[in-house]
Length: 304
Image 1 (cartoon, helix red, strand yellow):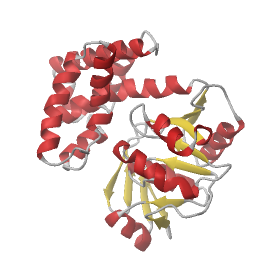
Image 2: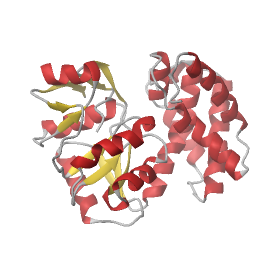
Image 3: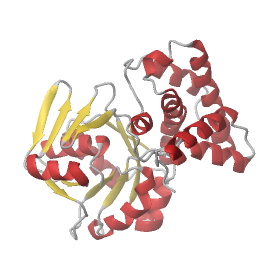
C-alpha cells in the first residue's frame, strides 16, 4: 500500500521470490508499473518484475499481508481505502516514519489487524517504475504492537526471510518504533534544514553538536512519555551516521528538495508537539521546525 522507495523495494523483493504481490501506486509511477513493470536496483543487480500487478485502489480481495508504506500524511485516507482488501486473516504491517501510524491504523482497521514494524532500508524512486536501494542497510523489524510473540509475526518473518530480506522480530513493539524514531527525528530535521547529505554535515563540528543536542532533546521527550531507551542511544546514533555513506540523504530532505508534500509535522513537528504537551523543552527542534515549516509553506509542501 504505497509503492514508493520502501514499498517498491520490499514489494519487489517479495514478488521476485514468487509471492503474488499487488502494487498500489498513482500517477506516472502507476502508469510505468502497468506498462513496463517494476525495475528494482539492489545489491549491484537489477531485478525486473514484469508484468507487475498494479492498481490505484486496493481491490475487493482479501490478502494475507498488507505492507503499509504510504507517507504519514496519507495514513488516514489510505487506511480507509485499504479496508476492502483487509479480511479476517489479513495482517497490516506498517513501515512508516514516526510513531503514530499503529494508533491510526488500529482505529480505522481494528487493532487486531495491525503489526508494528520499522525499516532501515535506504531506497527511493529514481524515476517512474524504477526503485533503487543504496546498499547501506536493508533491515526490517516486525513486532506485535502490544508486545509478546505470535504465530502471525512468525509467518510474516518467514515470508520476508524467504525473499532474502534482513528481517528480525522483537517482543516489544512500542519500543521498536521509538528506537527507530530516535534515529530518524534529528537526522531528518538536520539534513532537510541544511539541504546536505550526511558527509558534509559531519565535517562541521557544530553540526555534530547539533545532532547530539537533538538526540538529547528527543530522549527527554521519550522519557517523559514513559519510554526508556538504552543509555548508549546518543553514541550509537552518532556512530551510525558517522559510518553511513557520505551521500546518504533522508526522505524528508529529498521531499524538500523536490518541493513535494513533506512529512515535517509527523517527524520534527511530533517532537515539538509532544515536548510542549509534556512540559519538556525542545529548543533546537523548535528552531528547525520553524525554519522548515516556513520553507514548506512557501512551496505548498504542508498538508494543511
